[in-house]
Image (cartoon, rainbow, N blue to C red; front, side):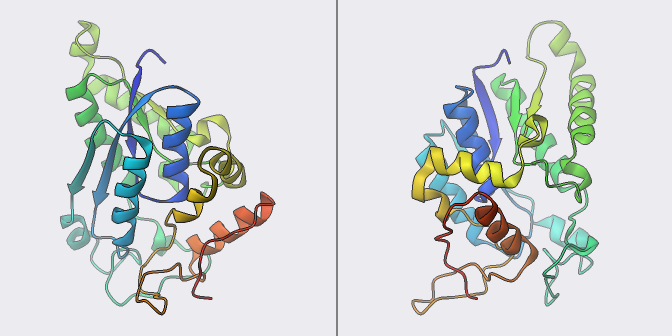
Length: 235
């Protein structure tokens, strides 16, 4: 890595938060964070992203509203559709088509304006159900970004963008939990994984539902990492 800075896509979830802290504290890259509102059912993740961006010491935190994506997806997707049922196990209905392609391409435009050569997102080795989390996708998109800005890169005006994610290091989610706990301590339990924020505690504060596919993966990863999960779940 030539760049000393990185644009980190931060959703407020465990994977993206740990990835951002990893590149800052282990790879020594100064973070610039970006979060997307794409019509997702969970708005709590935006608040968590702001919290962790501040904790991370991000130079800048951008929130980009691409809520029109909700209209494009309609009710075909369970993470953006209204009154759809979020499954407990993986189904194609929770794969948001081209989401990471869109996030990374927009982030690359910001990175180019800052002459930053590293993009970071939280795809890990257990994300094989999601095509836009696989290493082949990462390398293909990096090649596309290079071709789309070839002249400026060839003239030395901008860096060639590298995409870093845990999947490139073959990090599994339970390994991210261990890394995150080492770097963040109990703050790791403040990350937000739930696909919705409809479950509430007695103070009407959002809590993880504990039943959606993402919550179940979170619970399993803490168990596999032998770390007591202090996340509050509705069930």
